Length: 239
Image (cartoon, rainbow, N blue to C red):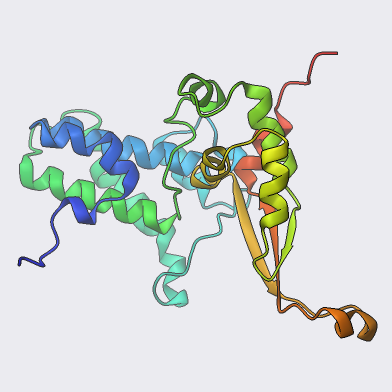
């Protein structure tokens, strides 16, 4: 049995969806270019201030004090300060070239670029699914994930601030079902990076409460910056 990792195993889910099929069809340069377009869109989704920006301007803004991206600490926390330099270098070296001539991008170079793009997506903690590349709210409605745009925004509003003790989510799922939301829709907004769960240790506010129930964890759902930005721009329901 061959346990060595294949190229496909090394790629981020977004690269597998958007760039890998192009690579697999033998179009090396377009695949490489597509991979960095995915990184651009994924980076722009992390904060409302990054919308409509591309290339060098996007990278500089993403790691400015205005956006303040919260990056996962995958290696040594001391190395986090070098992440902006890594993005600037990769965009300057690969993205600009792949977006123009790219005549020297062969099968091997394209494969390496797809892996590099996957690493950049992991560094910014990109969600499995792209809101922008899905076509936005209208695209999700068109795909049949949501019945209409109002349902999408209603789900974001419902989830924001929900609290669960000791991983007890039964009440939430009952509420979702009663309000007409599906499990697929619930998972979708997480996959899109629009909501997150914050966990903390829980201490009962009083000895009296501790007598009848002493939970150990408190989970609270919050909208991410991207989720808050979408909800703030949601159209007002018609009277």
